Image (cartoon, rainbow, N blue to C red; front, side, top):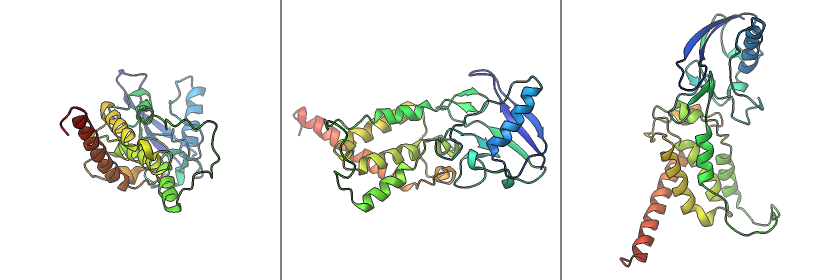
Length: 258
């Protein structure tokens, strides 16, 4: 099959970018989208031109680094897959496909299709760690976890931090990402004692990084390659309100207003 790619090219942060047209011939329908980009880059290198910069690692839908907008959708038009799992048979012979980086103020472009998504790591870091002196690593079965709790925590832990939710949201909100991380950590027995501190710290860091607010478009859930449900956002909002009111009450009590 033959396709036409319109790819965003940008030499570096702050440098104006442009769309660059590439006619790609002899594409196998069984190729992944990244393998097709590899083929394009091999041709560019042979011509002595700069290859297209894009991120990748596992190419198994696990790491979340292959983040890009394909045909106007985060990770492409197919639901529940990452860009590395998107196969060219999704498209038709002769298709014109636009490929761009994720667009969000908190995700500045580094080069071409590569953006800086360290803001998501800083949200996780704001949550800190469980500050219990437990000595050496305990046995995994030492603390019983009810199955229903483990199941929901595992659903939330499926988030790979790719940022598709941010890219798909018209407000560039990171609420789905943050709420998934909190739902995972706060449900497990080890994370429960510090849930209030954690939820306030992570939400406040999210706001500081410049992500937008959630206005219930639900595009985040549609774009998420792991199909994380939006119910975690509602849970996070309730938890943040509860934690904030508790902190204000404690502050008032300590000041003698209780």
